[in-house]
Length: 354
Ligand code: KG4
Ligand code: ZN
Image 1 (cartoon, rainbow, N blue to C red):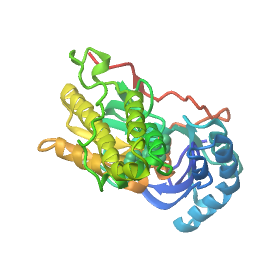
Image 2: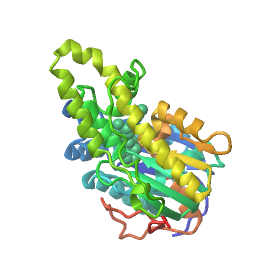
Image 3: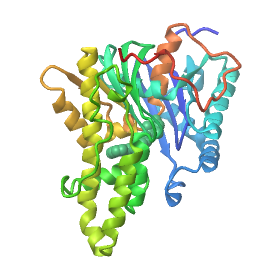
């Protein structure tokens, strides 16, 4: 089955957003994101609940998307779906829905990689967000520093050795007694506080060796998380009012530590690759403080691409955009397309540190 051009339906169900979008020629015609709120009481995503919620809502989410795009299912030219990485039950819902839909309507279906889709989120609003660029992909499950020389040619510079940065935001927020997801909560609270009253570590910044040492580009957030937790325990000994008084400054210091690390590692990548075009992707890219710091750090010669907030966190428009790109290149998945919770990043070369 070949792609003849026309609107592409994208489906995203890898975690706790059920989303569908129609994209044509790189433009969004319709887009619905349903963020599952059933997880909030548990303080984190419950995989089994996520899968059931996707199943309950996917038909309606697609129907609303087509209505918004003002097209019929018969007008579609292809279907793209996140095939991984993500939660297996959640992925299976989207992949099987897309395969069934494509089969019924005789449409080409393509499975795409969730983190590569985060790279494409930028091009929906900035058509010139094309390689070459240095990409910092920061989400709840991944922390990746890449050099993209062209689409599908990605060189891995660094990755986290333990927790993903979004995961650190979520866990520290939980320890601080804040809601889920924790990133937006910490950012909101940090606006009322100031960094420096408490001191948290900036992990993996003090490597003496240069780019030949993998620690130069890699990240680690688990020690920072533990340090924030120990700080919370110490402050709590002063009672509830001491904690309430300290929280904004604790949040500001934690955010500052994370942003210091992310900015400095990205600047190292810029220097190493001699590429001043930097692209952010993933849910943590919603963080306004990070965007402001990164943008000023790249002055005067560099350029920052950051997705609009709605397209930074999980959404199907980025999936449809990547699917459109791949289908247009003549790629298509076979009937054997399956959900893969550990899908490898396509086109990712080995470490390009030397
Ligand atoms: O990309 P995403 O929606 O899902 C994954 O693929 O994981 O990212 C979700 C992550 C969560 O950890 C959430 O706390 C974080 O993005 N996040 C933020 C902000 N908004 C969302 N982190 C920091 N600051 C924010 N404003
Ligand atoms: Zn994501």
